[in-house]
Length: 93
Image (cartoon, rainbow, N blue to C red):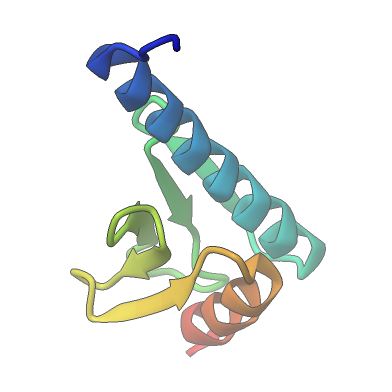
């Protein structure tokens, strides 16, 4: 049996979170929402169509949810299309 070093597990988790943010970004772009990966791909910055502060999205809750607004808003990472729709509506307000 091969053991995985703790550092390798952390790297795999980080890569999975990056992948989830890329999937969300791609869905937002399909909806016409400007979003970009930031902070070494650990966060997604979602721009508002009108002047205003962007929304910062992270993968949290053990990698199970996208979260934004200080984690007051969440959506499962296995539904990036749904999360993009919710975020697109949120930034349009």
